[in-house]
Amino acid sequence: MQSKALLRTAGAIALLTAAPAALAHTGVGSSFSFASGASHPISGLDHLLAMVAVGLFAAQRGGRALWLAPATFVGTMALAALLAVSGVALPAVELGIAGSVLAFGLLVAVGQRLPLPAGVAIIALFALFHGHAHGSEMPLAASGLAYGLGFVLSTAALHATGLLGGLALRRTLSDLWLRACGLLCAGSGALLLLQV
Image: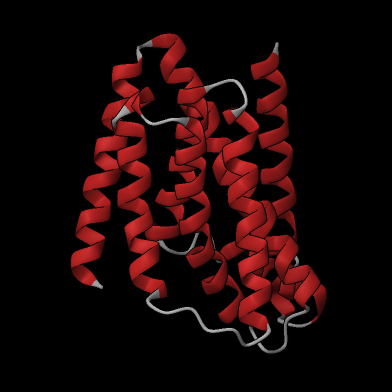
């Protein structure tokens, strides 16, 4: 029953994220801003893998992690985006984003061995880099509110994708498959780090 509700929520978020992009062909106004924000998290493999991995981590841990891990990422990311828009610099942003793919993959690969507060702290740390990138890459013509709403909803949809996929893996196969996904993500992160 709970997984059906999560699936409906993920579907609604995906529709909300995709619909304005179809209306954004003019390149002006809040539709353009929302679409720009919504497309940023899915435009790069580094963002995409990291955000799905947060959902996998939440699915693997269950309980409070189901909402705590994604909410921590989204909240920290939004604050970091505000800092970037305000002109606050953050060093090594691209390195931090690539490192997040490795770190989040390892969180999933090691399974339940790390205490939840430590895992959530790692998620918050790396969310700073993702948020800063989103904020600093906001188009000049974009509405900050619409752009921010776009990347927040798109990020939440990616977390929900990882969460639902992780729950399905645990239910139909085993946690071992989930950990294998973590290893693949970590390997991708290592390759991304070599390219930074």
